[in-house]
Length: 147
Image (cartoon, rainbow, N blue to C red; front, side):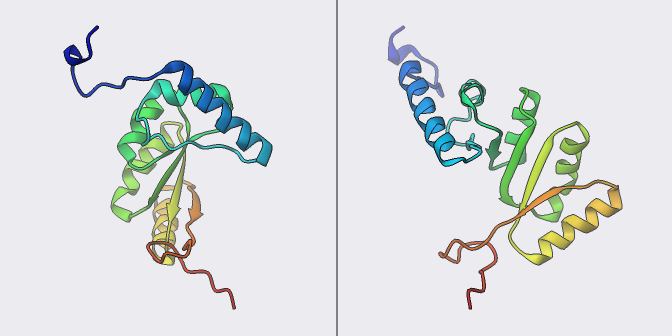
């Protein structure tokens, strides 16, 4: 097939290079004792995420609930939604949890954490919630008190 005949958007992947990169990254994470959770926004490709999982990745990270929904349907259940959760998106998170998705949520402030807790109580559901700490650029997250 000639490149100018390929319908776009299209992913063109050098599989040998991809597999080598995945193996190298997974090896590094294994050496460090880190449970690797690749971010699927990089490839947005189920087959790439499957190759990462086959190499030892322990879950995936998403930036949108739409990504979570699509990857869950494709067979991924250990999913971290890495964007600060807002109350208006909790019904979609609940639907994923109730469908069997091990969806983890991130909050970046106390108000959001309390909203998740209240929503969970109201719907008799428990959410695993990760608190984002400010990594020093003051863009998001709680700023740690280092005094």
